[in-house]
View 1 (cartoon, one colour):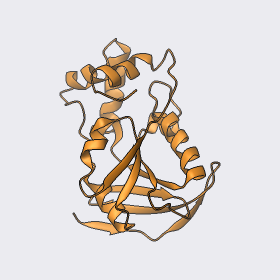
View 2 (cartoon, rainbow, N blue to C red):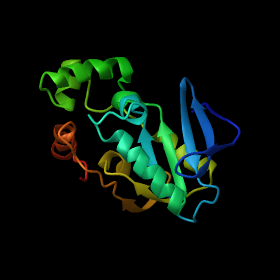
View 3 (cartoon, rainbow, N blue to C red):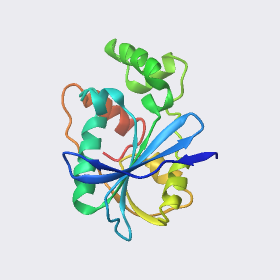
Length: 187
């Protein structure tokens, strides 16, 4: 892995004050957003980019709501959000919008990706081990509902899983049901 690491900057937010650092792996630039003081076993949220949910606050998914929840929680308890640039479960924004169009026709999120010729999930998490090693973190409490994230970290010990409790609405109910029933998310 050819990893470049940026300098550290302050990141004041509506949730609290954080530090921010970028980790560049070839053409992907990921972020670590963390509190000034990290607990001995920090809570870490691995969050994959979702422009529609994170930026535009779409309620078609729960991504933006999960990111907001994590920022509030971590600002209060101490810890880190690792923001991975892997939009649309790794298929990119262009393909994600095409998948959204198929979802509008009644296909669930997995079927829409399949109809476009993609697998369920292309996201990779190896960079997370490298980022946590950079911070000399060996143990974490992982904030996730995704079983793939629980299995993906190889160099870090996960002490506890911190569930991300979200509410559903008419716009994301089917999406959440698919995550739970077809992808094994712990909802």
